[in-house]
Image 1 (tube, one colour):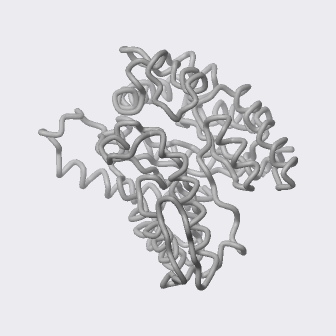
Image 2 (spheres, rainbow, N blue to C red; image 1 turned 90 degrees about the horizontal axis):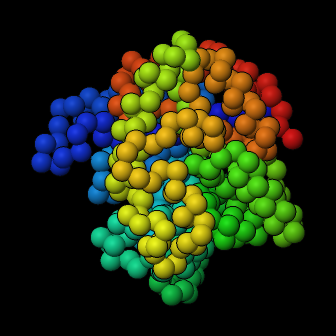
Length: 369
């Protein structure tokens, strides 16, 4: 079965000028996005993941666990989580306590997704050197697992120390009985580490053949470490939009994606990707990763369609492309970034309804080896 998940980064769809921030329009935006996640449950999505970013119109969800708590009260079946909570930005103790609370508020539907983060400006504003983000992430993850798996835990590390401490409330299910954590994994170093430690991975923004290589690498490293790995342990994020025809879908989605990636380039991509990748990041990998999105103009639509990053069209076009990619990559988890840029409520809702009626049932009938 190909499992369809929904992703919502919730970016600001108007002019990104903080002095002209539109309060009323933003209230309407929050309200209809909540409605859209209710529709996602009816449409047959497995769950919804939110995103964490700070200080930018690229995302209006600096505290995404609040969205998990909110939509949990309006749904019954959807699994809910964040892809990903950025561990170095937080006290891991606070994240563990929130996860324990959300386990109850979701009635056990919580999915835990964690990441190291890649936004240099966010870390600089927090006073966190980029070279510290990996050790902060790995120690924080270890602490979160200790807090959620033991009634009484101790922890001795570089950034935190606890002696005989307990979390209140303790989660409904300890970590030992829950599915493994999702980790947002991009670089080869992170892929290998996740495989060795037994974490599931979610990745994005790379051409289909590159993702197949990523997942082959992950599976080989996991098997060597004696950890389970297969289509169910990997997830792929793609921008997905459906309208009645291919032509209509592109006419709506292209300006919306140009707005989105304009914000993406402004806030997340280093100004000089060839020479200025920060210390602590794999320069060769991130230069290659960000190059398709760099430059001063709009993203190259056709290139990103050819890469398989944008999947836009009629229901039959999108269905066939998604099934083909799932088999080529070897992933049974597809994460649809379905509302982005300047898409309106009606355009988003229509896309979700078409996906639920004409795409998702076909995905669930497929088997990925």
